[in-house]
Length: 228
Ligand SMILES: C[S@@+](CC[C@H](N)C(=O)[O-])C[C@H]1O[C@@H](n2cnc3c(N)ncnc32)[C@H](O)[C@@H]1O
Image: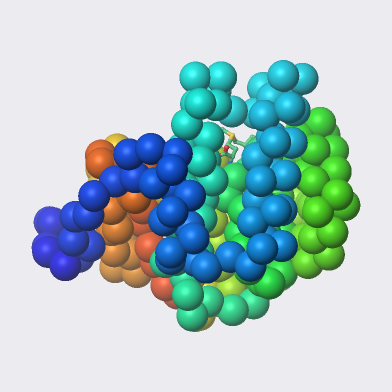
């Protein structure tokens, strides 16, 4: 670890450079069972097929699906090995990272997604892959009933201060925050209130040399709002 500004940053490591490397990394680090591999393959196939019907992932990323989406999601599990309790994935879209987490672990997972067609896909995958520990909240996050989250993840969901503000009510002292934030991670972190910043450190992404993942632990009090 090194210090970058006020934050501890994990050591740099080689990024996954090919689809084969992404698969090997998942196999080596997360040791999926044969059944989990089969589910992961089926999810990948369903995602590509559904992408022809609705815009779920950029077409340019399909040839690199395992690096850009599957391993990119799976790396969050590696950062949460001792995690427990409900995993809440905000703005799950096609289940990235939420469905990958559900396939590779037995953690109960709540996928929060406001768009109906995306929720239809999430439910179809959960039924087809018999992921009984997955629930889909088809709603805006703002309308989802508060419950304690063991882990909160959000990929490409909202600017950092907004996503934390919207989801703070789900956090407890033991909540782990896993927020892939691309190239602007440190900049976004620097804009947070100091009290929030201190809960986070910065990890390098395995899938993009420039991308970072904000990893935090603890309860964040939602901002106080005046009466409308
Ligand atoms: C850019 S997509 C990212 C999807 C997925 N996490 C990924 O990385 O591929 C953002 C998703 O968040 C959903 N979303 C945006 N605002 C939301 C809200 N307030 N509550 C629930 N879902 C929301 C959108 O419908 C969309 O599917």
